[in-house]
Image (cartoon, rainbow over all chains, first blue to last red):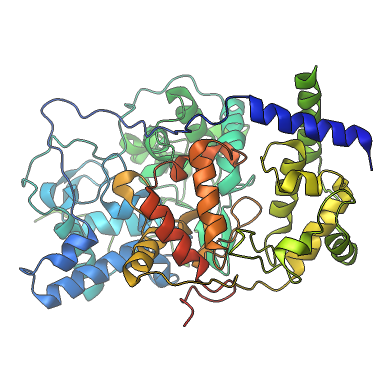
Length: 327
Length: 223
């Protein structure tokens, strides 16, 4: 027996018995406080859904189908989804949670004009956007059963919310504002390695088990494309600040959230479906969006997004992603 | 003086943890260590069973089929005191790191099988456990177990061990150890964050449910 090791082990045990370890551990949930005057929504739960006898059973089934699509979006891999993302990858807590991109405001605020595509959007178009960009896919057809199920789930989550109320607490991912601090790639990488890599991997490719995605990839062919809202550094920073690491919202400093958002969004990913064939031209054409991304800029000597790679998706732009004119 | 020894050991261990391409253990030798013990304590199989299946009544976890790197880290942590157990510490403290890797390779290579759970629990409790495991309780900021522990809670990589078919007594003891701060060797407090938000009833429910899952199947409750 190694007597030195024995001594050390005993020492360690004595230490752990004498140091005040028994104090109750608590890891805070540090979410922002709701601003005065904002509408605070409490989205219903699936238990509420099952208990609500006022719903026609068939409607309940359709809502449940939409919920299942939302939580298990990978069932549509190769049909609607061409990467490893699911709806709940970004909209945590079943799309119900404030500060986690709650999805119900889509049905109480739309149709409305959206800056991203510069026309009045329906709820269906908004959902299609998530499929086209964040899931690098082909959205369900407008008016299809699948799209109706998705809309039904969204609308049910909005139960009792005021229509056209825009002053909504905990909506979207913009709590940190759009003004970015000075960003440093190396600092972002440090934060990534310390806080993110245990789940998402050193190479950002996430982790899989038994052929299923557990932790989604944050860049590369299996992650969101260059047109996804999450490529905007301010969006990712706010998402990370209020949702990551999982179970510890608000644990990163604002600056760390910005730095790691910049690091993640300085990596390559599938092409923006709006690509014109020239990355700098595309950045310019959609500058109101891309002014917040690193797309079409040089990072570490490499021009990001300068490629024709659409990931696992065998086309660039879904056919239902198109402008409206109402003429 | 003692403290500095502790620090030195911690430093040495983290240096080891960071060194690339650590040699994999030898499962055949690991089997030998499992039956011999470390020379100063009980052999592993005395409590964890002849096939690493665990013993729920004693709260001894199943080791069979768990991730080798996870097992290695836990044994090293017991040895260093980073994970506190008056039982495990004297039983592994005389194993070398190479022997610990052998043991980990041995147990990781055994077929996953659920611990034998004795006693019955109510359907309501199991239903609550199933909801927690698969849907979580987001209003209390409790994500579903499966979000990190993977499909069927069969474990993911070196940091998220299999929970399916694990001893319910062990699981509830560990959740309570996180709550009290006695256990604190999880990466970035990821488990402590969730564990401290669980009620006693939720702990009982989720441990009962997970323990009754098939360790190697698709998450069906055993008949």
